[in-house]
Length: 336
Image (cartoon, rainbow, N blue to C red; front, side):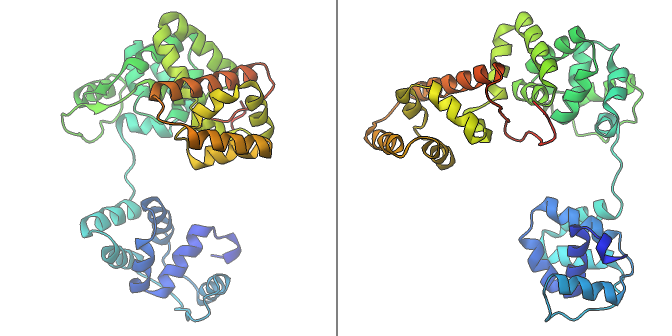
């Protein structure tokens, strides 16, 4: 394994194998579970590591006090022992088992790994309610791509039902897996699980191309205006304005009355206040700070109305092509 072809997780895995179980367990304690899995997956694939590779990795990490161990073997035992000292033994065992022999997803969960167009073909002739349940088990980005491959009216019907969906019974999931000829997933008990809802619909729409999103919202508006309004609010929040570049943010501020802006900043995050103050003149920033300090209690509804006004201005400017907005969590490779 040439070190110039290794990624960060593989180098970290070699480093941890080299420093021993005790030191590795200390490092594992400071990592997120997702990071542990990433490094653990790389470690689980390793069986023999040449001394030269270990040396070069250690040099790169500038850990000259650690002597290379040469060939390292039995990585499962290492993972068991190191994670067992860092985590609850049962949890550590589950992580190791998942890393060494990752289970293949079954049932509806398997669709997460399928091509979106293939999933769209699979469900396109099913009732919109069944489609809504199926899609509600997937991640928003995948949902957006699948919906974009459905006919416009079918898309709107599915979105409508997804937005009103609250819970799904495991029995219903098993019945749908049978209808779609999918290998049944392991039973998750009989307690209904949360699914669907306005937030998921909003996230799925955010993952679509702009014209498709707009068309879907228009059809949703015609079918249920209250639901469409709720989705629009969930699509873009006040804190999402932090994703706007300075030029766009300044354009928004120019369109918002200063009194409304000050109310919107009441109890806002430090990051939001800093972004506003950074994009106005020094004198204007000072005046707003003084207004905020002198402001007494404000009703939550008044703050929310002020923030919604800023969002409406931002959306209007975006529709007019004058600014560019990026919603929180939106991938950099999604053009909006």
